[in-house]
Image 1 (cartoon, rainbow, N blue to C red):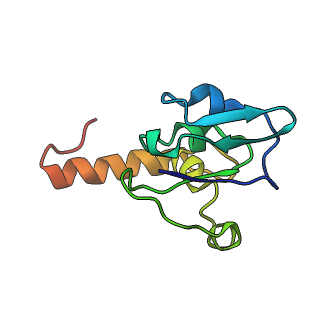
Image 2: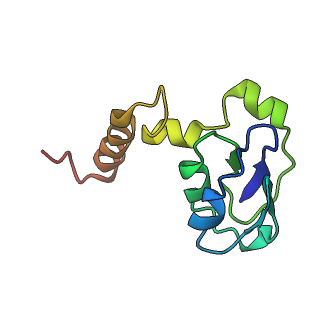
Length: 114
């Protein structure tokens, strides 16, 4: 579930507003969008993946709200971690996601492809 929009990192591009399939955010002129309908979040991570400045944090449990600290998330490197895992940000590793999928396939018994 979406838990944080960092006002200090956000550049008010509203990409998160545009990509959210369930209309969770409310855009505001020249300000960070607000989480207006948190319970509608489907935890798809699109907002976090597309945020160009890593200003969002989505907690992986779609059914539970948790209190988060922006400082702690930043210190742990959680802000932007989904984009990095996808290889979509500076320092990201596009092969990392492929390696994880390979491991899941082996665990599921389907074997490697290619």
